[in-house]
Image (cartoon, rainbow, N blue to C red; front, top):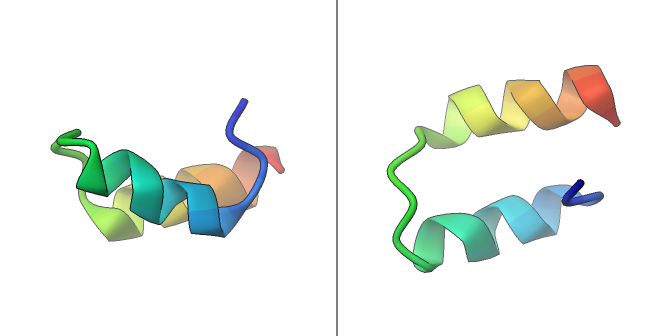
Amino acid sequence: LYGKKVSSKKIISEGFKFEYTTLESFLNQHY
């Protein structure tokens, strides 16, 4: 979906309100 952890920072900066740790762990589980 997003692919890389770097993209998670972009998602946050675009205004999504996910916690970084939650998103980090999501990416770790699915990618």
